[in-house]
Image (cartoon, rainbow, N blue to C red; front, side, top):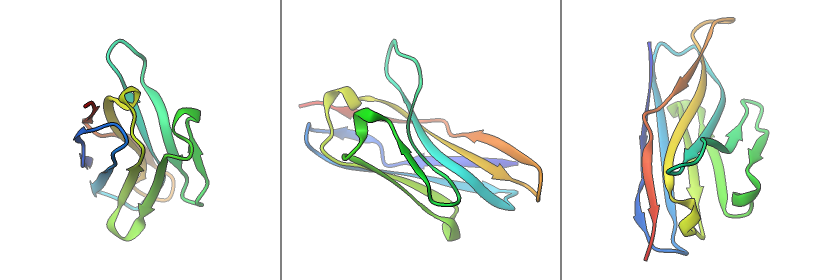
Length: 120
């Protein structure tokens, strides 16, 4: 079984920064693509940033130049550095990781989410 634990959310003023972390634990052979999604009230969940095991990144247009995704494979952890935060970034942020439990079997795993609120 695999678990993801997110941390780092909170309340921040517009223009501020936050760093989200997501640590995977359990039966892990290796980690595949890792990413962050978010869901604001009344809106659909959307991809914010993704990072493949090969290092390829993907960002939503709305966060390009402000957010940076990174990973530490030794710690089984993915990070999201969020700078120049705007009120429209307010949402619950979810970590998503493709976890391989052996050479061929993988589990698409989601965290429980962490609240990010950008407000003055």
